[in-house]
Length: 314
Image 1 (cartoon, rainbow, N blue to C red):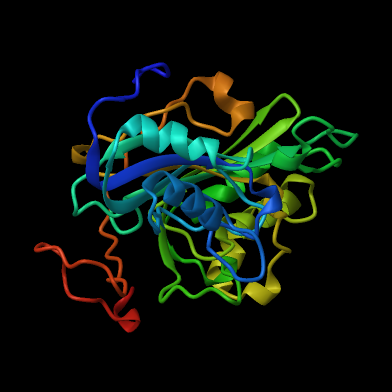
Image 2 (cartoon, rainbow, N blue to C red; image 1 turned 90 degrees about the horizontal axis):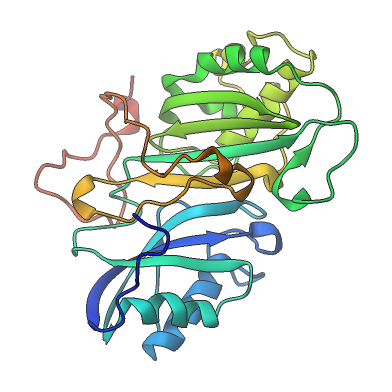
């Protein structure tokens, strides 16, 4: 895909539309629409409704918390009022605040669901590891002034790869019906003063990435040994683990779908890492026997098994 591929401005399309969204979460109370504060969902729905001249509701690939950013959030909506793809992109952006942007629009079949059809999600956590706090991009990363040993962090993180019960990294208020998740990979790398925790899984429990980042920080600066993540995983007790890392360093960077949906590819973010040249969807998904539960409201597919009770998990 070319970054400058022309957006169709002739054919008017109705039905189900997918959008690629990026946003800076600093001034929002997370993705989900709320009564008591601004949300990305409310801002996007308001802008889309102006283009459609009708109320619209969007579904996202994965909800993000207050202060968390996204460079590739996928959403979908249904609209019976035909508009061109250019109208959905440009018209929506005109009505959005500057910290939210639609990157592309793409028609999808009715069996596409941004959340339920996702095969994997990927996050990156950014740490400015230097003696003084950063001034540029300070809202997109956290600052840690004690030197971090990236090799120790990488070694510690490998205990989390695979399918596990992540109760030890799960927020107390998590509403997921099961703590089991399959982590495909975790990579910790240093790029100059920037330390990047890159993690992909089939799904995540609430605060999972930020709790993992909090534990890895204590390993990197020497407060804990390399066995720390494995210990937390084995104990399964969130109360005996490290503090949750701040939201500002977390970025939702990719989500995978079946190739038949043919969603556009784009440079993998966040923006401080665009220079690395990786594009969305480049990592292969590992083999997995993970059997997720059926969510309430999810359309039943012919090949979809019956709901798996929580007590049936390994």
